[in-house]
Image (tube, rainbow, N blue to C red; front, side):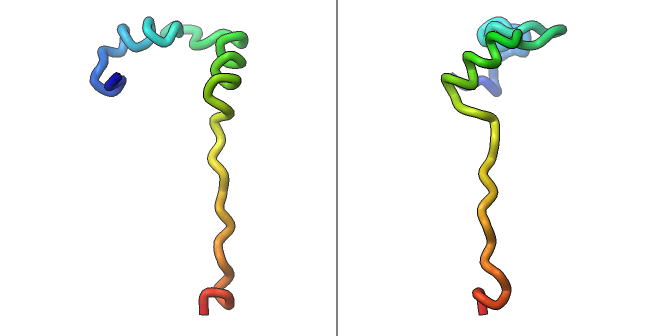
Amino acid sequence: MKDFMTDRSELIKLLGSNKVTGLSSAQVEANRQKYGANVLERKKNKSLIARI
């Protein structure tokens, strides 16, 4: 599915959301279980000394 090409109203309806209130707590938890937390892992950079 090309969500970025879908009309905003259709996408909100498709995702089961609400334009004014967003997702319910139950929907958020269900999505978290299904897709995982919305968190990016930060990669530790090598120190300057290690790169040299």
